[in-house]
Image (cartoon, rainbow, N blue to C red; front, side, top):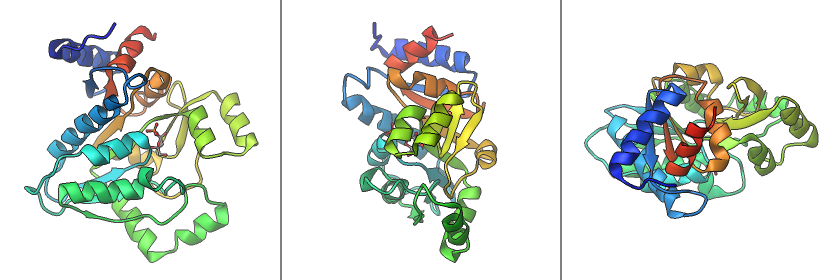
Length: 255
Ligand code: F6P
């Protein structure tokens, strides 16, 4: 049963925060899987937080996906702070342009009155292509900026769904199943304990860099993503989770 009252939501946020052992949890009322507007609300909440955390010269890294696309659309306008930079944290997926980190970076930058850079690289490269692309001066510059990001805003996906979306080869899908991958974020696949079981061959943020970033905001809703969210909450204590009420209630049920 959903709560819907502000007081109830604040209590729920605190319970989930304690349960996950992370710094901050923000919850939007409702159930993403039953109501498409909940996605916009997730975007709004995450967007407001980004706007609040952004100061002069803040570097913001973003990933792709439908949830992050909602964040890009809903982030409020600001013009108080100067020198903000938005960069895609990983190479793009290639197909749906509006859900790519590149597009989301540009959109967010427009709202934040910020500068942005694009990462022109596929998310699934062969070793050789990866090596040569890393020599490109423009790509080197963007990667340098990503490494010094102050804030990373990222989507969280189910490992099986992401393997499908990325059309991973059968052997990789089997590997993910064998190693019990449940979660995917910024190019890494994790098991339920938050251990890396597979890494996408792509350019952008590395796991060690993620752990060093002062501020990270994971945005994901829907009961189906609860296992994925739980895995991510093991990665880093000083992170924020933005989720929906239905997922939050399920997190509390989960032991
Ligand atoms: O592909 C980018 C990405 O952020 C993944 O890292 C994540 O697993 C996925 O998108 C989430 O996608 P969605 O918000 O569409 O569920």
